[in-house]
Amino acid sequence: MVNLTIRSSRLSSYLVMFFMVPIFFQVQNFLSMWLGDYPEFAVEFCIYTLIAIHIDGMAAPLWMILYSDSKLKSYQIGSSLVFSLNFLLGWLFLYMGFPPYSVIIVRILVYFIAVAYRLYMVKDKVGSFPIFRWINEVVLSSIYIMTPPCLIMYAIKFIQYNNIWADFIVNCSICAILIVLSIYLIGLTKNERAFVNSKVMKNIKKVNI
Image 1 (cartoon, rainbow, N blue to C red):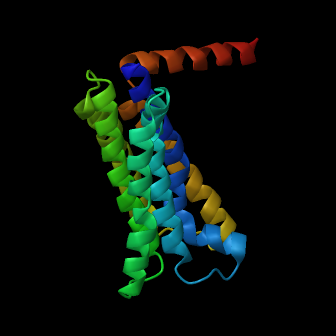
Image 2: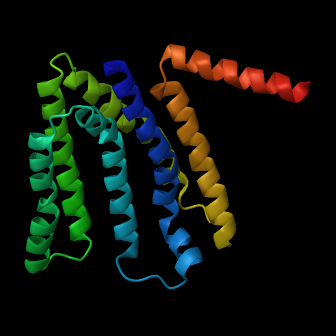
């Protein structure tokens, strides 16, 4: 169960990352193609929302463990109190004059608190659950995987193709390839790479036949 939970968290993180990182570097082009003249703060809303989705995706297998237990009362009460901070802190930030996208930053903070709370509850119910292993193999691994593609994309983001569609397609394709390579080389274990290699070779043989 522990191995399955950690692997599910990693794969959920990788799946969100595959779409998230390319959009990070092409969010303005993406919004221009989709909306034309997009509203103020739309870029910030998109970026921070993607970060929030990534954090929540990593932690999803944790609440699946908790929901498998019939005794949900304490977890439901605690999680409801944690997520109610979205409204309370969001209202407070806006009242203090912070920009509108501060409510999404609040959501990110609340998701971090929710992850910590879920880890605590999982450890309480499954005493052998390795919290530090989950952090290392899921959270830190995601940071390691995203760093090389982000650095490369940041270095080449000034290259323009004088066409919004060409710029979007080329840069998103390059970023997606970099993310896949980074996941393959850094994010997968030796056995997982061997499994992927066998699947790829099997499909190549089918195509050749």
